[in-house]
Image (cartoon, rainbow, N blue to C red; front, top):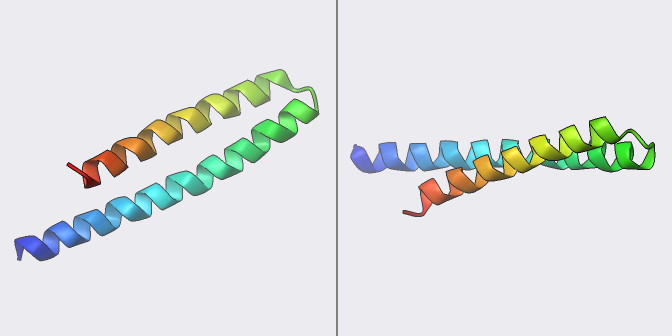
Length: 66
């Protein structure tokens, strides 16, 4: 029973990482468009949120590999 629960937990973490990476790709696209449109505040804020999402995804992946 413990083994099944651990597998379920790791599957949930992988799904969270995939969702975070999807949002991060969207934010990088928004940041690049904002830079091209000379909207510096939107570009830097979306880039900052993208970095935070990267850190969260790295923490989740570190959780999978003790």
